[in-house]
Image (tube, rainbow, N blue to C red; front, side):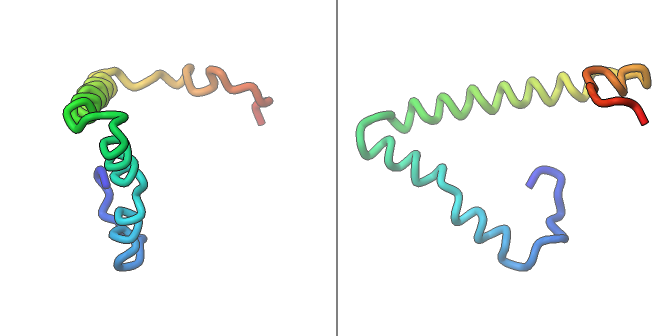
Length: 79
């Protein structure tokens, strides 16, 4: 997990969650039923990974918001 030591998880919990991930089964099913090719799915994953990398880079390079921004788009009454 990104930047997470998983210290709060019981031993084997993460491995069980990874084993239960539905995406690999969906991917196999899409390919097996002729709905997508491995190459097409690889290209989608590559495109998404690049978009995520770009968003992370943008976030790290952006300035921190000012304290005035703290209540922007907050619609409850201030206490």
